[in-house]
Image (tube, rainbow, N blue to C red; front, side, top):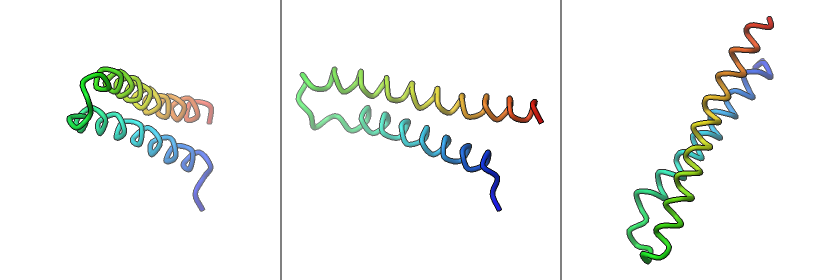
Length: 70
């Protein structure tokens, strides 16, 4: 059986990769949008990607802290 820590780690990694994927998609495939929307979409993509990266780092910090408390 999978431990709850492993499930939360896998879920956190999948969530962070989803946010990073959305950000990359928004950055690289925004050519079809009008110029007015591109600036807003670029900002949204950068914020979404930053959250995905932060979430990825946080997953490993929580795991490291959990290993230290065992």
